Length: 211
Image (cartoon, rainbow, N blue to C red):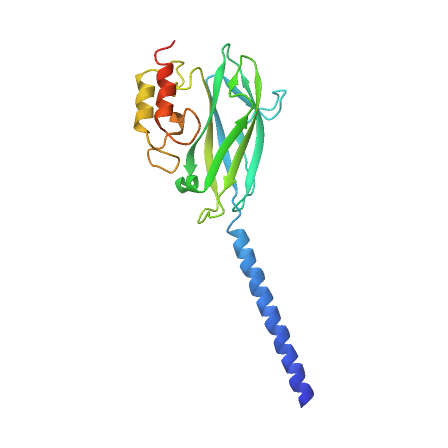
């Protein structure tokens, strides 16, 4: 009788352990399947820039896939940008059309390059960075567009190779905003500090009216 009770007790312990283990595995699987974030971004170019995967400029970039990301992760992707115009261009890379829109609250896009001004025919190596906030929630898939813009002047927001009243007004409308503000306009962030302020207006006015 004592032996049977001992066996039953052991069976209960084993079954309890298995139930707890299975429950934890299921919970972990559920957690993982709800935090991986598949995604992609379309690539558009403006004003004389060509985008490639290699320094020899033989493999054009059509889109960028950031792979599978989890909260707290950061992914770096390197591309090469060639200036096909006969004048130097200032490089701006602008993330737009976030889907869903609230992804912008949890995802931080940035890029680094040795020289933001690309001379005619020059190829610039640019590293893109996408950081996922550890607090991200309710986002299981996202996408956004990247606009590669070459400007003759920083204040030339619309790419018409001059700074005029339309450019100044666009900056003024976004004045005081940051990426999490509804008035935010990434085209107007001339000094790339993620704030539209007096410094951006000064940069634009400096080249106002130049051909």
